[in-house]
Image (tube, rainbow over all chains, first blue to last red; front, side, top):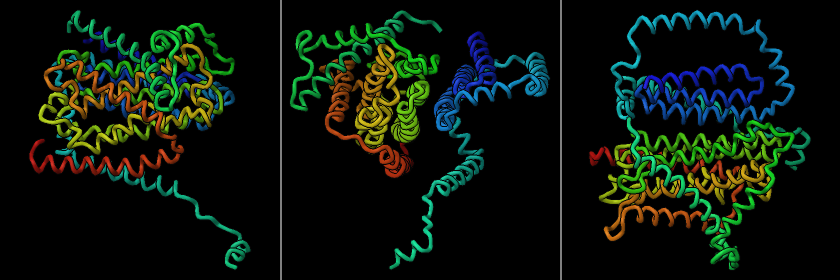
Length: 176
Length: 320
């Protein structure tokens, strides 16, 4: 079990690194999908099959499809690849990279000091998630619903058909 | 965690049977279309044309596997495999008969939804990598169609999940011993059927390929076995949707005693496969925007009302 975890974690780290360093946006997104899939496998191994399924359905299956869809619509060609090559030089990523390294060291230290993660696992299935969401966490669900409603209203407003504005002479002609 | 010999045998048998079935579905489809359109269809190779798929396979294997210069090569090669891979994986959760089941997961039906949403990448990446205007148009249509219909597909199943109280397909079949879910969940069945056709982008919803407007759409640049994989994926897809309809709404392997359960399952699935083929012969293709507005304006409210009514009745009779 622990070996499976390390394999999935290894795939996740490698694919995330590849996602950052690709110059072609679609290639980067494909690596990101692989990274999300490996995170889903990790969720499954840690006893959260419901979270794993949602990770694949929502993140890998819907949101990433939308992102790729957007990249396709923009039709980024050779010029954007050249641009990315200029943007991704070491002076850009050295600072954030160093800061993340500090966090990584800190986290590894915590993992070593504290108990082994993976001891005493309990499988959390869909029923328990539902009871938790609609019991103690009901206010969070309501807030998320309001946020989504705002998004839908906004999308509806942006997507509505534009009112046709005619030149005043044309308007007169129509009235005649 | 021990892997038994029996499980491996079941896995191999499922893969083998599905590939052969997909091959002969092509023959069946062409013969039936011929029958319904008052012509013969392929009847030359072997008895009643039964060896036609074999001839087709030989032909498609020996065609030149040509990758155009202008495509994104890695993605171009990757795309056709995804749909076959995800569809075959989805079969892991389908209980063919008592004991004949690859994986009895407690998130069974969610696994199918996850795999079907990953299958959309095949179209999108294939169309994008082809670097061709028509292919790109097909890919964009495919992406919006599949994202839209995934929503109703997931929601239409939830009524069944409420009634049986489980995501596992085995428990869903066992919960139908007193009566098939087609009766209490008729709306769910209709929406699932429509969404299933749209997900497998079969006619009449084959808008991503649309031969008459997009000259084969997302797979326009593909030839030889890469095209064959898209084709295989489509036939596996309709087999998958048919067997899921049977499992979710028509009692799966359940049936009167005089036939073994697996035969019942195969018979019921065959009925829906024939229905899919009949649809192709009977219906014209809607326009792209018609398909999407039909989905969001009719199917979505319908599924939500169905869910609410199912939930309310379930609470009222305290069946949950």
